[in-house]
Amino acid sequence: MRLGIMGGTFDPVHVGHTQIARAALKEDGLDQVLFLPDGDPPHKTPFASGADRLKMIRLAIGGEPAFAVSERELNRAGRTYSVDTLTELKREWPESELHYIIGTDTLYQFPTWKTAQRVAQLCRMIVVLRPGNLLEDVREEQRRLHAGYGLISTLLTEAGPDISSSQVRMAIKTGQDIRPFVHPAVFNYILQKNLYRS
Image: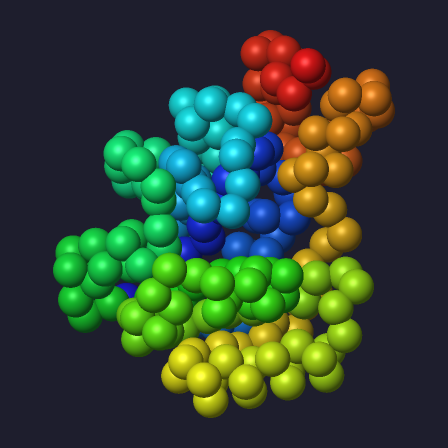
């Protein structure tokens, strides 16, 4: 099985996340995309609780049979590192081929990942071009990471949309309409739970 993995805080999950997952499914011939919300990530601190972020993902991917969500990182005590999750997934599905879906901003951070070399052995990367990153610069970084870490990565032809969770949170704080950026069920949940207002 070719398993795509989308990790992140998903704080909140937005239409860009699901758009990228669909593009990866199509372009990379994946069988499934697994959404993995972070528990206690090393690079950022989530604003919404793990339970709320998990619920929003479930609402966003409902009705899409090729999408699934895992609570494993939310349930793990202490810091959550991708290498630990990839090791677990490989142990559970030894015949599977793991494809980690990341943005180009994350690609540039790869050398800072815990045991980056081991991560490169466990999975391939599917890279989404983010606004502001130049294509040739990204391809050069891919070459550097392959030479330095053995990381195999492919760049999606579909660029990532110009949207981020931080932009959605700021829009909520300033009273802007976020309906163009999130699934309708996620919009209703944010309103109902009064998330990201303080």
